[in-house]
Length: 257
Image 1: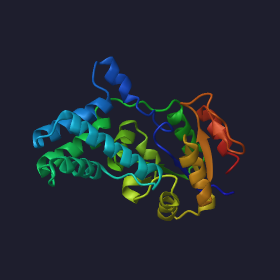
Image 2: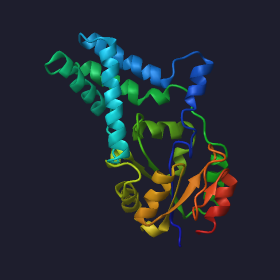
Image 3: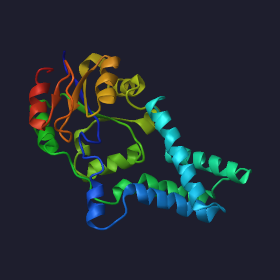
């Protein structure tokens, strides 16, 4: 193949997923899960006459439906969708529609979307050197990102990458909240292909999840390489190139150039 575009997943590929939890723990701060729950409870306990248990139950039902949307339908609904789902459940409890005051809801959305901007997130070992080497050796092969957005939307992920001095390397972006589809849907890979004006067969995608980052691009007609840098000893798959450090990746990719 003639490689023209190299795309990357973000979490546990370019940056270490939940690495900000280390800072939280070292500084006796609540985990992201706990802080999110506290934000939900604070908003809905003050915004309506609901018990903490009923709010927690509504949160649990929302998470369950989000997983269904993500895993089955390949969608990652935004924070407003999450809040609307919670409010629908709470409305059933009080037997009349309940909608959080918009000023409170807007503030809650921002707090949830920007939570991963609060504390340091760690870059995956070897990424920066790899990107420098790649740009120096293959300057005409562009780089892109294909990433699901769970709580942090694409705009927040861009800020994280910029803070880590990684954003400058990438020319094309396909975030699930902006595309309207998540991996392994072919829609998100098609979006990248169309916006980069690159054929599917000219793209190699790199990521840490077999279903999302290998089967997804392969179904679209591209190649996939499995990142196991943060998952040493993980299962290997027949005929699927994988790497446990970024120096290995450079050697793997040279076969596609």
